[in-house]
Length: 261
Image 1 (cartoon, rainbow, N blue to C red):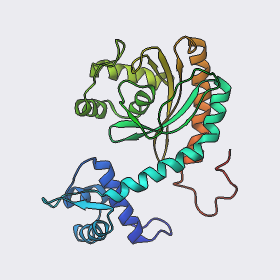
Image 2 (image 1 turned 90 degrees about the vertical axis):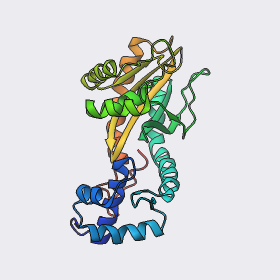
Image 3 (image 1 turned 180 degrees about the vertical axis):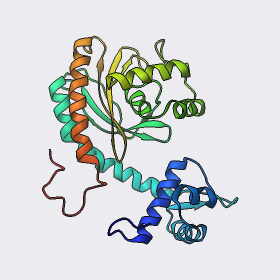
Image 4 (image 1 turned 135 degrees about the vertical axis):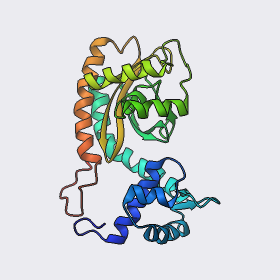
């Protein structure tokens, strides 16, 4: 299963971890074989090592899921991603005057991994590391817009759609229509759907994983004119972050210090 000059055993172990992550729940060796194309014997041997090292966990029914060591590494990775994204977020916050955020799709929620405060004395604040619902936030709807409609329906059935304000969308089919509009215009808007008096604009992008970049502020300042400006600025910022954060094609010979745009 090696690609290019990759080390076959490493490629196979990473393919297993990616399959466990994509499954979102415990899976058996047969399901992993179907997802990766690897022989069952190979999967069993690799899983023994991954379980021993804490990267995978075996349940009593002999199914497997990601191990706790992944969570520890994930927290560190998110902090590093936030550090790399801060220069782009800072430029957006200065240009628009409102708080800029970066969120990642995480366990049926949106997790904030970076934030740069706006320039106003009264500004929005969301704790980095906190998770918010997908159906009621700008970053959440932006992330959902990258999923097929049936996947969205399945996800919303799992999570539910609790109402936070009078404008929260709580009907799955209305959300599917909303996401079609998000895909068409390229950005999502949260009109006080999570918190009264707060408006947010968010743009999705993919850089190895699904991200959304957003700006949020008090509704009186987040006029339609500012929303239009924010959408354009966020699309430009998303393009920069797509190049900055996607390490899949970046190697030790990448050249230059692209972490400092």
